[in-house]
Image (cartoon, rainbow, N blue to C red):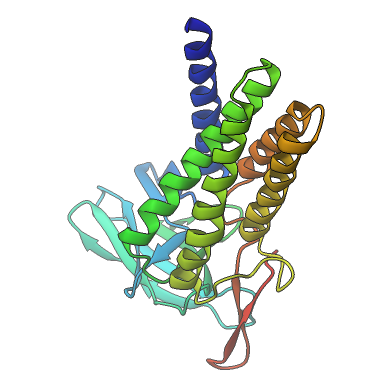
Length: 275
């Protein structure tokens, strides 16, 4: 009993740690920081993803009322001229908006703050790239997130069961495969459709990394399930599926995702591979 509890605790810790790592290293995690311009302190949290029909807000905390700011942006991977928009002061904040884009459309932007002839660019070294997406209903998003988290947990638990030579290998292997099937292969494309107007942009249609991660994990667990019922030593197949699933799902979410290919003027097309 204590041994089983210890294994579950280890599985939960590994799953939570991998989820936090994925979240913090992902390309949609906000750019946060603090800086100074002419001795005036500022703090900011600049978004790299925006869902829904409205414009994307850009807000910096700048208590010094003598500091002014400009939002500078253009469509990503285009030769568009940079658009400059003066930030508006609201109490201690300087605020602006980035114009709404079609699903999977991206803008690159930065902020310039000025005081007493000194100008600070945020971020200092490169522009921030933000991706727009459609609004995903909670009735679709919440089950997808919960099922994928449970899939990761049970997958990890199955791998630990294989190492421990436990008796519930078949049960955990079946549950892991079922959760990935429903959460990733059923709910995943529905979320993708709402967010980026395409059900599937992975192999063989494209190289969307999120879709391909799910596909690889699904294939590995199908192989593991076959091994559980037919192989003389199934635990190594289950362990391999668990490790592969853990590794690929630690890859930041939305990395190499669907991206809108802007053309001349306002024309665009959905590109199924990102860089």
